[in-house]
Image (cartoon, rainbow, N blue to C red; front, side, top):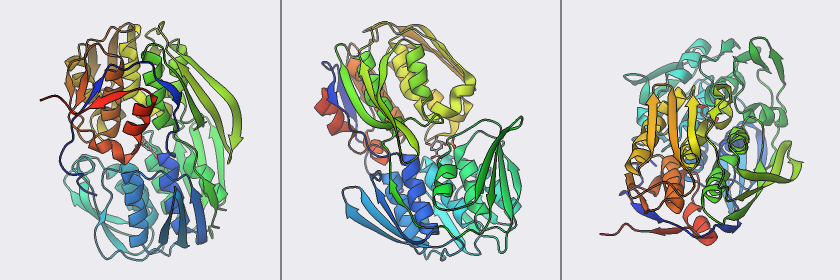
Length: 450
Ligand code: S3P
């Protein structure tokens, strides 16, 4: 979907205590990968708990365009009849990945070593985002890419014929780039090696191993080294998608800052490459506990219990934690606004190339609501106002960014005056049930007055 219609402004009013059980949707990263790896396997992959957000629906549609049979059985249950590694057909039309950087980058990787041509586009946000980080390693495999200036979409990728495995050191800490190289390596001869100086989310590695690829991971002085043997026959899988920690972050954060709250957020994936926010919140003094910790489908999971936390303290977030909480800085900035003292977030320049420039979007929106911030290219500092201390009353521009929209709606739940976002529409990309779920727990949303 390259546009989502007219902007839909929404106001979040100060809410009573948030209480009850917050059942958040399936993990976005794992949902994309389930569809793509299912399409590259031979036979039928069954998926339950798939996130039915627009980003993932766009990936499902794309997999159909490459020849896989993707069926929605209702209630988050899907199946994918894959075409096998190297079996992608040439799409008849342009692939529109909507708002999804993960979708377009992983799919480009998955087709780049098959001799077909595909043209990709996306919405106004995705068309601004850099694709050179994917097309550079794809060129080393022999694929060609023709995009707009600065490596922007729309872009046509001509897949390589008879690609040979290679070794690639990630120039940015990015699971999307790592995953694109590994997916391209699937149809290359011999071994493809990815070296990541900083560990990023490892769902692709775990899932490739589950689908029967030969893959080894080793931690060395250079970082994590992942070696994949090319041209495996991937075996179809039955996948239960865990709930998304990046979505759980919103009700958890809202409960910590809203007086009297006590929420249970069950069954959340706590893979260490994703759980950095929860560690940080606990360091700030959050009343956040892991109940019933267990393993499910090879991933650590627990039920999160979050209660109102009046004694939050600002902290320095260790920069090396950034990859494990990269999507959570916007909502952390909201929690930081209700802490005592300043919260310093360094090493976060990747936030400038997400669905929006998230440093700028958070800084401007927090300022509009009475919070003092400092920023530079790679840093965001929030000066906390203590519990109940945020004036609110402002409007935040969301720039087609779901996480910016949800963050400011959470700010409004605990601010003194209502907080408005200029467009709640993009929330449907990752958390389509956000508004009814939060309303059931006690949040109060309305169309802006006037
Ligand atoms: C994702 C990786 C991250 C993250 C995105 C999902 C993934 O992006 O921001 O929401 O599923 O691989 P980068 O790899 O660009 O950091």
